[in-house]
Amino acid sequence: MIKTATKHVNILAAGAAALALLASPASFAGKPDGPGQPGEFNIVEVAIATNIAIGEFDNLLAAVGCFGPLDDNPVVDLLSGDDRLTLFAPTDAAFDALLAALEITDPCDVDTVLFPGALLTVLQYHITDGRRFANSVFNQNGNSKEIEMLAGGNVISFIGEAGPTLHDNAGQMVGVVPPFININASNGVVHVIDTVLIPLSP
Image 1 (cartoon, rainbow, N blue to C red):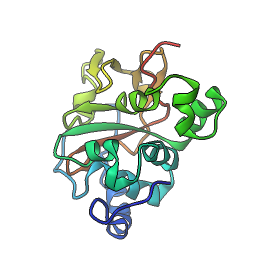
Image 2: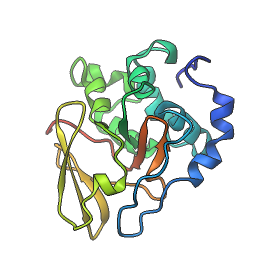
Image 3: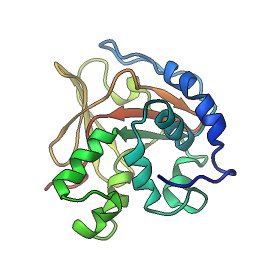
Image 4: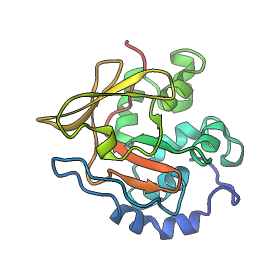
């Protein structure tokens, strides 16, 4: 777990607001929901608050922690800054599956197993520019849509029989986890997903 810094995150405030944050996501009942008002906390604070409430982001926060403490961390700086961003946040089970496939237990070892900079590339492949609510991620007419990620590659969004899914460069079909869709942050939106997006074909 990464250590927090007061100037970036007030854990007590984020934890107290966790239930409110989890009550605020719009449901996904076949059609994407529209945008809402920006939330009170930035994307990093939303991830921490959500983790306090449901315990789903230990691995995601550990992966971010590979780049340093919260007060000196390029990924935290990106996700807590003024840029409007959308984060597709993998659950702990999603990270567990990736780590098991790579035969490691620490997300910081991803670079060792794959290549230098691989973990940062993977994390950036979960972020896209703009406040993208479900109605922006998924076409309401059922057509697929390409979304450019900060890592440079695209994901394809689609609504099919399995519901709203993302398709990554490795050919995985990634599901969005209800009801954790359209979680509002002050600087963007968070959608929870059930698989770690892979930016490169195996």
